Length: 102
Image 1: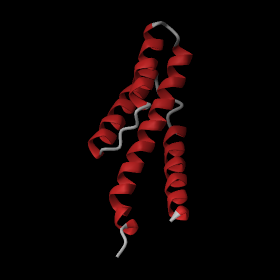
Image 2: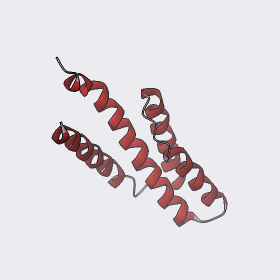
Image 3: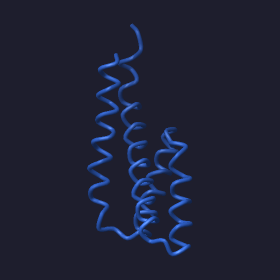
Image 4: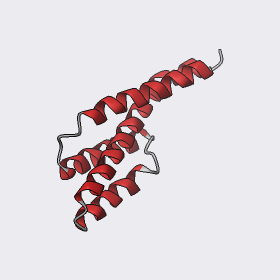
């Protein structure tokens, strides 16, 4: 059971890291838009992480204050978390039956 849980977490982080790696050439606005969309998707799956929405808001505040580097870092982090939570939600939607005793 612990091995399966470990694989799920590892897979979620690997998938999110791959998605995150492709975000480096994106603008802050595009990152925020993508993070917000992924977070909305995670919420619809019932797996929105509580840290994601505040990270998006903090990135927006940093951008508004003219701190582009900080805004980009925060937006990338928010996107990572949002995509990882979507992966978790999709994975749990498919694998929960394995954990039900028969």
